[in-house]
Length: 466
Ligand code: ARG
Image 1: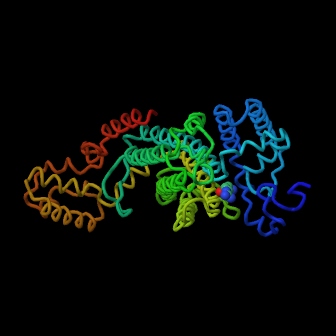
Image 2: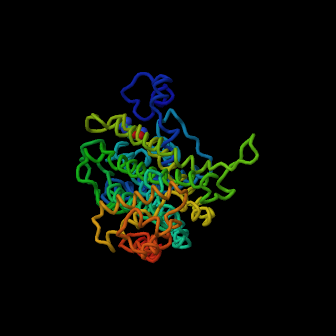
């Protein structure tokens, strides 16, 4: 009678008289979520079998049988005909057990010089490496969408805000380019993370390496890893590669949430700077007039769960002694959840940016409030009248107070009004108070002048290959 028929685990039942309780199985099994790793598990096993044959540990016939059996299993999983079994705990044992059914003894030799500890670390690294490539592509599409809008609106004036109060005139293109830079750094963080993900734990076995004459360099090469990890104990017990991903994901999601919040604000009817397309808004079941920016609100909310995933994995690893502990099985769901939600956020944001329409008039109209050229008035006094900036700031503030009292803009004040407050002023000042002039004058490197924004756009296109 087989171990399984005794109710014992077919995987490790040798020393056991009875099988695990149902509850033990419930808490122990990971197959419901780690089946996501099937392709990586199969790829890792094929590389391991190739290496075992190359080093003479397995025969060429066993290797061939393992390869064809694994290909068949992959096809079964993809066709939806494979039955995942929770009594087999995880993806590794589900595949190995099916391989035994298909090819018999050769399958039972595959686990030579390997453990699920190095296997699972290998699978997760392979999976994450591919996802990092997908994320990079998605982020580059978001940058392209932002740049297309920035280019179209390099001259479109709007108020720049600090404290969400009108500060100085900027262009909408300039504002969007700020996000292109942020996303560029997010891509850089993901690329840094990828370099550390891309190292092979395979062949570390349970924790101490193996006495078989394996070739870890060969499996690393076969799996396109940059190198085999130096220390087997580190290789099976580290998850900082996943923590690093979650941390980069949390930062990226935070950036997206800031843009999402701006989209929410800009699309209110108070601001009306932009309108979202029908594709990215929803109606209300009771108020027929509503167009709600639900996608933006969800992108605003997603950092909650992504940061939660980061804290989850940090907490799982904190204080965990080397080497492997089953605690580490709790690494997968936070990584899967964060990846899926980050990708959704990036792609939804890309769609919103591509489709949004921009209301120049509302943006221009908003510049008539809040005296956005008060700094330019002060700068004029510094430049033309050699006044110390602090004094100029004070004089400009008094002129702003007068405009407020009269209920007009700085530009609408008369020269006489201004000179009554600051007698040193000359009438050239009247040319420095327009919002168009104020934006065009900010030609400093990184400034908002339209030509400078166009320079930023061309540098970004080149740097990011867009
Ligand atoms: N399902 C396990 C995980 O995800 C695989 C490793 C099991 N190793 C062990 N020694 N029980 O971590």
